[in-house]
Image (cartoon, rainbow, N blue to C red; front, side, top):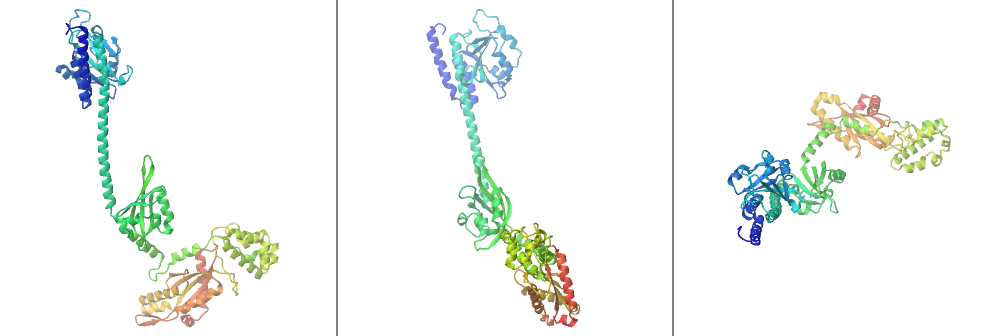
Length: 591
């Protein structure tokens, strides 16, 4: 080819360069592209040996492809040279545009570094541009073809076929080839990244499909109820999806349930619990309505399912039937608070109910301050009744109380009751009438007051405590046995329960002692109730073919704030014994 004219040589070289450049982008992988780059140097640029050194993620360069010599390939392929050694090489020698040429006279200092190389010693050049075996020529490949762009790799070439160092045209061709090789390597990396991304996407989609199928099966075939509800928007809380177990639990079809939210199905008393659980997630126990209108206890466990971008998306709810457990809990609670024989509230439950009506602050007697100011007992009783009535109303309507019975308007209130003498009462006396600032009608506790002592009923209503002790029960128990005694206690409990109003409490204190709590009674009302209950107990009680008969003694006490439940019961017990001793034994037995 040396005998041909220079234009013909350039044209032939350009055709070969064009052909190898066209083949750079035919590789199906990065490895194929790198090998194509190395082969193109041999086929199109007239060198006998080439190597492609690729920059790794850690910055070092690895020999990724070798062409032209199987021996060189075996020696260098896969070996790594440090980034420091390569930067040293690319800063030495002569700069030919973007190329770097290191003549053998300078390259001997590189013989012992860590960059893989195949150079061997040879005789001195016979003419100035003869290629020496220790000469080195490097063509850096940079991203986007910029001289200062990111270094992608370096093409190393050796042994030109014409035995000469490349001239201007050969240098330009190698530089152009390195430029296109950098583009081809970038494209190959992009394709490889896209292929990996597509493979990951496919794996993720497969995993998602498998996860969705697993969730669907777990959701649909779960033994307990499951539901997905919407979060946010106008349809917040609406059921989007329910499983068969929840449909069976509530007796409704999936289509019907999609028209509801849990707030439509929950018991009105449990709506607050539901709203707190729906907003915060967590667990709650509440009642849901069945299709037949009955309510059942369930345990709701809510999980807020959120999207990383959009926030909460929906609520996943697990519904477990706890009706049986609640039934057992109620039974246990009933056993703990009720007498096992009669089914009445026991002593502990009685004290709990009574204590709930009492507070530690005793109400001030209305007439104490009044008498010290010169007001008689009759007038004080009337004022006390008015104040107590105002106190009851004042716990709900305090403003009305202040307007009617406040310090500024108290004279008008007294005038209405005909008690003009109250105008001279001092603040302490008025505080005694109103109950004071703490414990008076201005707090949330509705105070319990006892009717005034005396023979006459002043019309004041209070909480009556009737202590009942059976007369003649011990002899029946001793003579006929405990079975008969138990039957008597059961019947007496039934008769007492039927003799009181709804809302009153009949409790068995122990043995043959019973207690009745009846609110809203005056003294005459309480006496009448005791008589009615005694008359209900007197009739014979038949058991196993025999009739037995007991009487009853009643003691009446009144619960009032400032007393403890034990003090109230002791007072009623003492009055019962006073009443029992006031009658003969025969009359007690007869009732």
